[in-house]
Every structure is written in C-alpha cells, then in structure tokens.
Length: 249
Ligand SMILES: [Zn+2]
Image 1 (cartoon, rainbow, N blue to C red):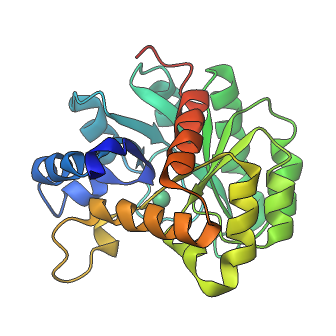
Image 2 (image 1 turned 45 degrees about the vertical axis):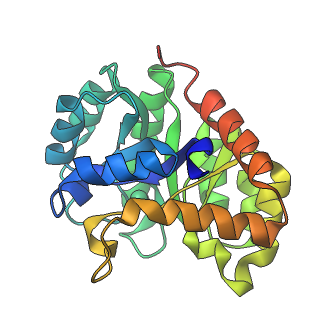
C-alpha cells in the first residue's frame, strides 16, 4: 500500500547520517515504504565527496555554506566548483539565522552563493531562521527558484517569502499545535513537499531507520491540513518537477 506513494524527502543529510549508520539497508527499506527520492544536502567537503562518488540517481545533492553550522568547511571556491557538477541539484542549505554570527558576516557568505546559483541556473535551498524581512529584501533581487526548508517562523514571514518563486518543505516542526495556522497557509499556497532534515545528530536511541520519519510527517500533515494523500503527492510531484526541471533525468 505504502509503495504507491512515491514520496520524496525534500530535505535531508544522508551523507552526514551515513557516518553513523550504513545507508544502503535504510534506503532499501525506505524504498519498500514508497520513499524513493531524496534531495540531500552537503555542508562539508567530505559530504560533497560522498555524493559525488555515489551513483544512485534517486539521491540528488545540494551544497552550501550554512549560516550557522560550525562543522561546515566549504568555502566559496568549493561551491563554485560544485555548481559545475552535473549531479548537483541546488545550492544550499544557505541563508540567514538569528542564532548565527553578525548579519553582515552572514550576508557576505549568503549573497555570493545566490550569485553562483543564478549563474548556474540552480535553485537554492534556504535555511531562514528569523531575519525573514532581510532575506526577502536580498532574495527579491535574484531570479531564483527557492526551496525554503523546514520553515517554522511567523505566518507574516511565510507570506513574505511566498511572494518569491518559492516552495516549502513541511517538517515535524509545523505539526505542533501552535503552528497550525502556518501549516494551513503553506498547504493552501500549494507549493510544498515534506522533509525529515535527518542528520546523525537527530537519531533517537533505538531508532532503526530515521528515513521512515517522512511517512509520519506526510500522514500527520495530511490529517492536520485535511487533505488526502493523493492531494499531497500531486503537490509534491509538481514541486519536484518545478524544482528539478534543469536536470537531465
Ligand atoms: Zn538541514
């Protein structure tokens, strides 16, 4: 039954997870549950190498200099050369984070990466925590397709970001009772898919396959937003098609 889903995990960190658990059995089991595409993120050189080496067409990777992740060792030259790789699908996750370094320093990393994405006709995966107004001011100057990942900020911030050419991932974070207005607006906006954002750090004790969390996110999002699975997957498929139209396969 599950296998009819054809679900895409719209944001995850498979290379990071693979440093803790062997990935192949997790992917195989996820596939049996209908999860069969991953838009996965590289935030370190080692992670970028991981994606460049692996040959599964169902795993696409993005790479970016995160605004607030100490282990991120990628620099702008790395991003520039990764942008030329045929297997990369987007630049990111990049953005602004109110818990990060002073804003001018974040912008000095964020803006050149937007320029690289525009130059290579790649979408951008955004991590926006606070600073939605500033992010909007910067982003409206770029003709970019945007995937705003795991957004759980204010409804006003969502409305601002949704004026751009943007899609949103539904995450565990907006299944909480105080986020229902946001979830309903996101679903009504129609440009969404779901994510796990899974990394090795989020693994729970005794959890054998965190990739399966996507099933729960989709199930609960559908219940809470009162949409059918078919409506969800139709929106997801439109999102994936629009976001990956620049790719060959
Ligand atoms: Zn992430």
